[in-house]
Image (tube, rainbow, N blue to C red; front, side, top):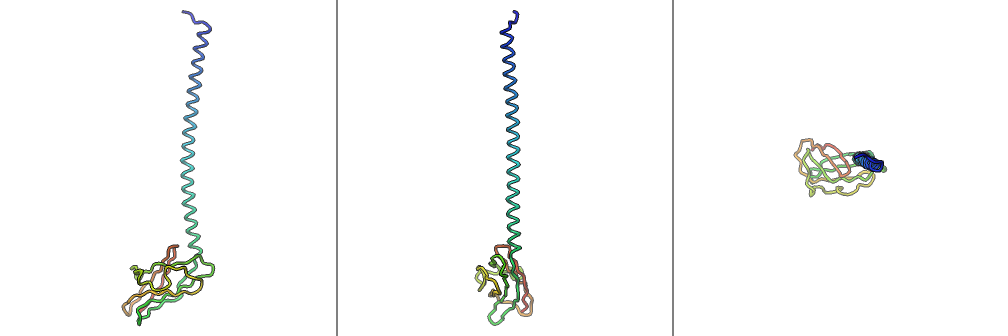
Length: 156
């Protein structure tokens, strides 16, 4: 049976439609893969940006902290350690909430004065209630929630 012009056009028309559909599907697959890659890359970059922002903020807060130990002594009559901390006028808020003596944490009940409050600028006295053995040197570490770490030594 010979192919007529109409049958031939229908056969070519079907081939053209299937090629258009296959090319369209390939384009859609390429767009989907590209979009997925873009979104994954954007999420990774955004997460890294957030982490960097937090780290920069933490470093900035540490850099703005201007506090130092001026003096410290042990009062054997009432078994207290007195630590004098200087806070600069330009300092970020300084709060000291934890003390360590020779790397052992002091219970919160023994932190008598100057702890868990924002220290004003100037010299502030912090008092720790603790009985220490005479004739020894003790390391006192004061820490706070915003990366404050002050170290001093007391000799009894």
